[in-house]
Image (tube, rainbow, N blue to C red):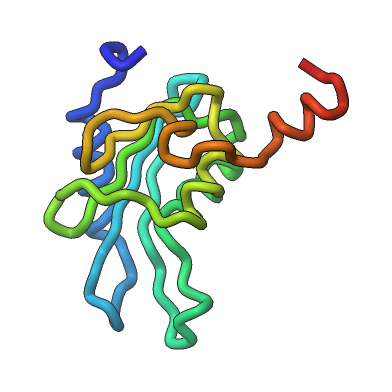
Length: 136
């Protein structure tokens, strides 16, 4: 699967997304891009708020874009800062990505390509609930 992903192209989409970030307070733009299980490429950027706790991470706008464009599961993901350098999503965003990931989703991280299970081991999410209910 790793070879099937156009990581450079996905990175470029994330860099472009970071240019649309709304970051008047931190001045730290973040852009993200992902491939959906149907082949679509979606993106997002962080949107800050004067009440800092209400700031939306780029991953939040990505998941919104996912559902606004038809839903699906994320299969590959890139996160960059305003310089185009790789960023690791925070814990909250890793959980958000896990919730909307295909099993084995790949992430370009600061330490290379990793699966969602490697970056948030033992996560609780929809697959956990499906297993509990006996749905496979």
